Length: 87
Image: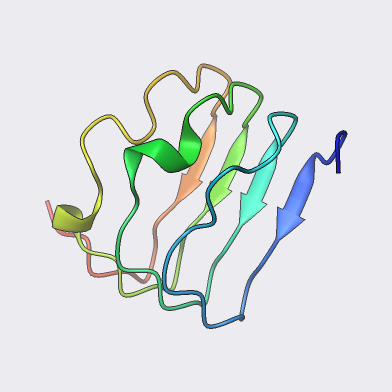
């Protein structure tokens, strides 16, 4: 999985995001799971990431650690529709 660029784990009843994903990852789609939090460590070193799809999860604003998406300079799309995130 050294050159893995796209990882689709939708509809798998995941409760949290996997850690230690390949550094080459550009697209992560984990919609329609049971994810309630996004830890900062999950995205550390994923500088090639362009797309993160988190929609349709019971995710809350308080479940996203400060700086979770920090350093992801190529990130251009984050989908959080159909979550419990409020402003």
